Length: 140
Length: 382
Image (cartoon, rainbow over all chains, first blue to last red; front, side):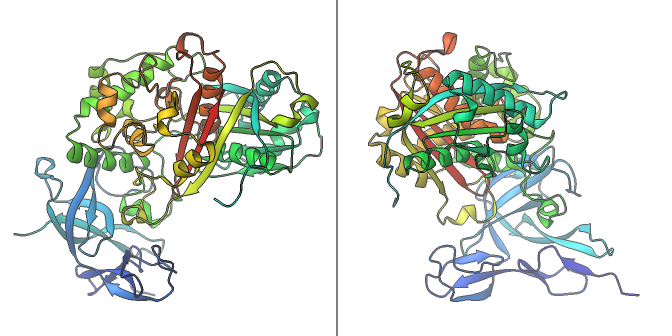
């Protein structure tokens, strides 16, 4: 019988660095022609359509471009309600949308520094725990 | 744009099924009523229609355009089902326009209908990993835009809420609208929070309804319909997806300032934002209307909220916007909304809008945006 594992929510966006799934890195692609970075996978560069792309590891920190507090999520969400949804700008350019955790609502501010937080967000059909990339306030 | 219209196209007639909730009817019944109304308005017989395009989104059976039109008589024409998210109906209209403008057909029908399920709208399938990430939530996307806009332009949440007050005031004058009740600013702001800063009345409802339009080549009108002086000219029909922008990479509602389709439409019509007398824009949430007026160049960037607060977007203002109640109060049955906007502009240009009539409009613009980053712009003129 296979062991239940911790697995990344989208393997092209997140690589786990330990079995517990507490360490990881965001993945992306860099265009060698125009230099644009993309979060996750693309086949051709979305900016210049070049096929000359290479895999990159993206920063595990960014700034809060915008946020909202979702009071009624669509079906399929397994987390707390309400939850904070953050639009986070990485230093490389891409925006990553995901939950902001461990942050009081009054502490939210556009422009604040955030860092990657890896948390279990659900299970797959085999009972493996799915680790989701989220954000928390960066330690000073 | 490579393709040029070979001849002028007019709207002969338009029709609607009221927007709201109709549990006793299926999708084809909603659609069929709108089609029958449009044919009657156009004074053309169903047996003269040469092609039909049907816009709808949710899967409620196969070949629903064919199923809708079967009851009118089996004439053997091509019937095409179109899915382009919230732009499905306007894409059907766009296809009908170009089918005529390129000379393939003389008389075409475009129609749309939807029965949207209740609850928050998401773009992906329910078992998609996006649902675990929590970002696939249409109104949350608009809320992210709203928060950023308020930060950048010092816009107060009252200004966004005012869009909803105006929408409901207009819908109260429209017997086809889902909501006929007016709200005060305080009632809009204090309605149930959905995704801050957006409250319930700042988000469009889930809706059912149908819409239809009959289009004809101007040089062929005499073969199909009487010249009753009620025909409205299609001055531009543009459809575009977004070009690259970083922010749009992973969310369909995050591209407020698209210009690809409006640039085409202004060029094609030889008209500019200053010529537009009446506007229908995609106000799925209040912020949508505010930013879209800016994207269209009708008001300067960052001043859409001011135009709302000072009453410029009211029926009595100089840029009357979403005069039938818009998505916010007329309702938003996805496939029907694009042609609903065109219905309102045609009605206004004909001077037949009754208590919602704008004073003597000559040019109207309809903008629709859909997930996948699809934008349609249609410009109509007297």
